Image (cartoon, rainbow, N blue to C red):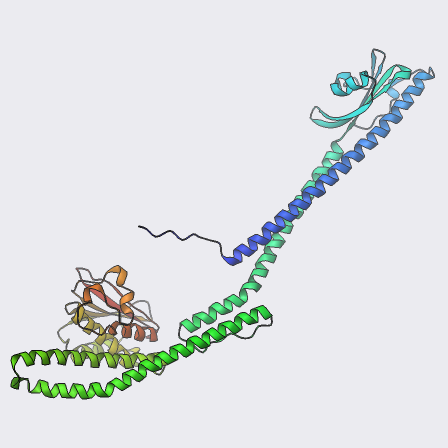
Length: 454
């Protein structure tokens, strides 16, 4: 069964910025809608009130002329620019502009005036907005209609809407910048915590956070420092315990090894079954002695007492000498032509790395078949040991460099489980790393990188 896929989420800084932006968007759009609706209602009401007042003034002037018997001139009707007027006197319409007739006005308004009422109505004619006023004048047996253009009001409303939208956009951008600035300030203490935690994880157990001015953040710093103190105390106590145990075991192991060597020197005087038992004791004592030596070396590394001492060495001369010293003189050694004649390495650590890789190949890979060195880049030396064994499963390639870890193929073989851990520790001291990959043709290829060797 496949594990559930991890749900992807936005970074906290991005979420804070998005929250500020969405809040500003909601607030600015809400304010813009309310402002536009209020302005629209006010401007339209104001325009309709003005139109109504002017229409009634004009209608009164027409009625007075009709009632006094003064000759009425429809061309003298005062209309607003862009507007038009129709006077219905009995059944006869009088048009101030022949382009407009009584049918130009909305039918609802005409029916209302026919029924003896007066009113107003907004409508569109030829795509332009108007407000129409209809007034019934029963004393003169007349109906007065006048239309006032609303284009200027609509233009003003569009300008207001554009300004409000632009203001909302500016507000959102400002809120986004404010969110980014706020998130940086809020996350700065967390970044310091992450940096301190990373330094502690890299071995700097004495790293602590500085006091904060904010009480809540100061509590975070104090809690982190207390946790770091507890972790440092525990790690140092465990490292001290391992070192003390290794030192205490060293003396009895040395004495036991000497006694076993004496017995092994007289193995011919022992019965066959005793010789078999002696062989088992000798192999286990030697394994135990090797493990104690590895534990002592790891305890020195953990305590920081093992420093890196670089010196110039010739890899073409050093690698064969180490292989010969540890009984691997027949193994093929290939040093690439790009490797400089002198590189800067810790000679003792380099020897421990190569010796452990060769021993690991002998114990778990059927023996080493090739040792090589090559340059990757201008300052990185890579050392490799190949074997023809069963290889290392992909799921175990990182775990086998942990302490007391074993691959599935080497689980029932002799070994301490600390050799590759020491290889990884010494590689890290050189600024490099250790890894394993498949060897072409079968087997494993263990690789170690060394940085800044030139």
